[in-house]
Image (cartoon, rainbow, N blue to C red):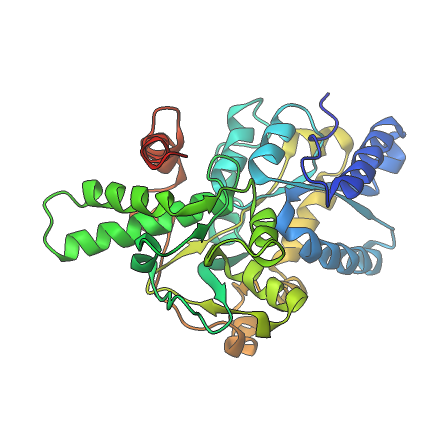
Length: 352
C-alpha cells in the first residue's frame, strides 16, 4: 500500500510526516480502535477549515453516540491526493476540490460508486467559492478583469492545472470569459478565440506553482507577479494571515463557481467498519453548524439561513458552473485535460 503521498513542500513536510506516521499506526491497530478513527484525505488549502470541522464533529459525535472519535487528516495537492487514494492510501472520506478527483476513485478499483455525486445534495459539494484576483496595495496596474491579464505589462501567478484544481478552475474561468466575449462580438468560432486568449494569458504567467498555497506564498512572501488568480476563500485567508492593508481583492466580471465535493470511500469505510461514522461526517458538513464553520472560513455556505447571516462577507458576483458551460467535469477532462487535449496545446504554445 502507498501509505502516504510524497511531501512536496518544505513548509508542510513535518505535518505530512506526522500524518503518514499516524496513518501507518492506524493500519497496524486492531479493528476496535480503527472503528473510532476516521481518515479524511483532502487538498492542502483546506487544512485550517477541516481542523475546525474535526473538533466540532468529534464533540457532536460524542454527544450523539457517547463514543470518542479521532479524525486524522492527509493534506496535499488535490491531484496527488486523489492518485494516492486510488493507489492504496486508506481514506474513509475524501474531500477534494473538483469532481474528477473523486471520479478517479470510481474508475480505479470502484472505491466509490459511479453515481457518488448524487448521494448528497448539490452534487455532493456542501459549500462553494469563486475565482478572484489578488493585486498589490492600491492596485497599481489597474487590474479589473480577465482582459487585463493578457496585457504586456502584467505578470500573472496561477497554480498549475496539471497538479491543482485551483489552476484548472482559473484556466476554465479565463476560457469561458473569452468564449463569451467572442460570442457576444459575433465571432464565428468562439472556441478558437478562447484558446488564443488563454494562450496569451499563460504567456504572462510568471510561475506555475503546484497548488494554491504555494502560489499564495510566491505572491505574498516572495513578492512575485502583479496579480494572483485564486479562490475567494484562499484570498480571504491571505487577508487574515498578512493583513488587508498589504493587497486588494478584485472580483472580475465573470467567476466560475468552485464546488469542492466530498464522498465516503465505500470500499475502505466498509472494510474498516467506519461506514456509519464516515456518513455522519459528510452529513455534518451540511448541518447548520458545519455550514457556519464553512462561512467563518470564507467558504460560501449552501444553507440559505447561514448564507444570509454572512451576506456582507460575500459580494454578489456573476457566475457560471462547469456543468452549465462545459457539460460537466467528464467532458472538461476529455476535451481539455486528457493527454493531447486543449490545455496541453495551450501550454505548449505559451511556452509552459
